[in-house]
Length: 125
Image (cartoon, rainbow, N blue to C red):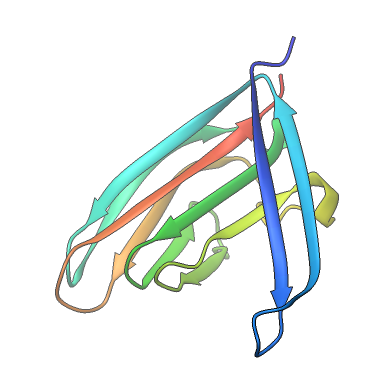
């Protein structure tokens, strides 16, 4: 029996705020591995995450200030997270950008002031 569900909602609006398109996808899975970290200004933070990507149903992450995320493989999957904009994936979106098992994610902040980064990998086993 699945233990959790996460709902992903996307919308496209015009200049007047009218919704032109909207999609809602709910993913249900056995569990999740969450993280909530503080990245120091002009520094980095590594969060260890034992993720078998073959079990990933969906994931998301969002930062309150701009940070760069890299993962544990060479070449890295690198993504700049824009402040307040969620980066996410679910199994209806095609290939998962994380193509190898995750051992850790590293978040780097280039300028002063701490950033908070939250996210989760939603998993079926």
